[in-house]
Length: 501
Image (cartoon, rainbow, N blue to C red; front, side):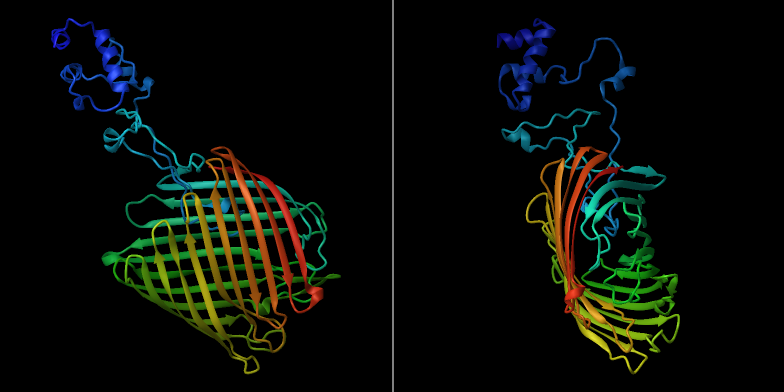
């Protein structure tokens, strides 16, 4: 009682008051929860702010010098970048910092110390300290990355007679996404260029770019329009490459789609129309002989309708139908076949949304392609498609992917084939600096040769700082069919530097 009386009457020196109050605060808890005389006395005196030095001289104009200004928010990498022509490290996805707010009330009731928090100098914790900072461009948030690697392949051409050799590879990625209160405009660009040291080997350029505009309409409806462009080269194992070609001709694909969707209620509806154009480059047969592939150039028109019903927040069964028309620039191809066709596909499946644990969808269906030429039999078969993302534990992501594609043919009186592919990918963040990833895929082509491809890979990245990482990849591919001489394998390894912003 004497001590409290002396305190309240100002007989205790101010530096003693500060020392005693600091002892209590550093012990944890809220002063008002203590019943001691000193705690009650301090609660009636001026509040003391810990951790920030305050002089008795009025220096309010210099407050910013002590870090009391607001910190600028960090930008997150825009989502939705395309994973085509990117390395495993670049496919790791957007990783943004998690900012924790003021200390919660639980710390005052438990034996866990609360994170320090001061007005104007908020404490932050970054779950992903090496996530890209991004940049601001008007009303858009953006991100960019550049990776330069050097590697070695046991089969640079990806063919039975391929030679081994070293190569360099450059990968770039750029993304922009609007920061609007309503509607959204998004664009992305990814590119890759592989150049062997041996000038007699083939270079491999790839480029993909797209832009999408989403308009938020009334009553839960959205309208989305998308345009894209893709540049790639044919593989020596492709069914549509000219026999005897000594290079890999270019393939350009571009187009767009318009989609109307309602997904804010139990009955979800989607209607989409699309146009895709494919243009094939000329094939070099050697000796100055060039073969045109213009008879393969075509437009593909498709109309898709989808209806789903949300039976619970986690499951939405759906049914989807597609009607398409493939129209070639030349009505009759080099073999005298008319390859224009009509495509009908019907499939049903389930969308899954179990939060961070499991998301995605899977479906099964049937597809038929009817050709104008009576000499070409109908191409038909069962389709299987899936895209699931599972997180069994924190910092671990596993993806299951499956798909079915129609594959054309340039052989006389052959209708083509169905290509089935399935794979699994994983990503594991070992710690804030080190991440690993890997994949395994299986592809089966039910053409006359029964092509089968297995591919495996593992990679990793180690972040030196927020803008630079060391990357490495190891991949192995096996190609087989019912002609033993056509089989081959390829082992490649590479290491590079990844820069990001």
